[in-house]
Length: 111
Length: 261
Picture 1 (cartoon, each protein chain N blue to C red):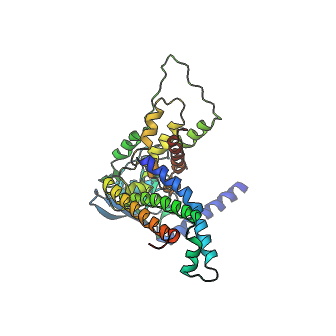
Picture 2 (spheres, each protein chain N blue to C red; picture 1 turned 135 degrees about the vertical axis):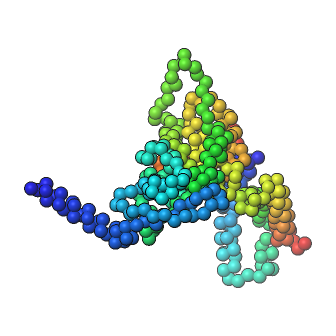
Picture 3 (cartoon, one colour; picture 1 turned 45 degrees about the vertical axis):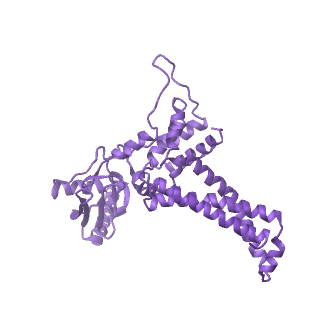
């Protein structure tokens, strides 16, 4: 179990590293002349490419972050492994649900 | 004649240095030593400040002249046995290899038992958890040959032998175990010394139970719990890098996961 979580966290980190850089570069590029919500939506709505990009981003972040939070809970707060596991799993599901909701809002149209 | 001059110069030099040290702290060292177990407290002692003395010398001086009941451990006094490790001014060290003039701050030193281990009395800790984790990490060698077999032939230039060489000089003084923050946070964490030992066995071609060893180091509290903070590496008196050994174990467990171990 520990080994599997360790591997998952490293693999998702490898996925996240380039995605975060592209994400940040995109923000800097897109807002350089000021930007409105309409402009963003006009570019992202219906784009399969951005849906896949941010879909993968959300999945990787939703797996990566809770594994780290689990370690922090166990080491710093004395939470039991079982409880830390449940809290982290819930956090992961929450992140993925919120993330996909945001991706759908930007790519698929207003909810 | 020339020899006599050299000796005189040397003598003056020594006197000057002695004078300078004495002026700095009036020739007396204030020594704060932990007394009792977990619920103990610090007691103040003093020792003459000498030009050439180790922290272990100071502890011995206090025990012989002021506190006969003071409990502490030592054996070889020359950095071979690893039994005199203590916390000196907050840093885990071999007291026999630590010169007072290197660590004293304002003519004062504070000496405590090693961190992360139960305190028995004064400067003596219970090393049981340290050695239990060493076993738990699969540190016990298991051979497959008998006396009748030829000794194994290991290529001294091979990568595995060189990896084992880098980890093999550990004398189990527990300085790294006391320095490690992850050990302090996570009671299940096997610690740098045990995992370093495991890494030397992973690279030992004669070790018969590689599967058991790999399982042992990837259990809860195994190598993946390490944060690579490197405190073990910074404080190891022998200059080993358990951090690097643990990184090797992590790499191994990643390869094992993909079936390429």
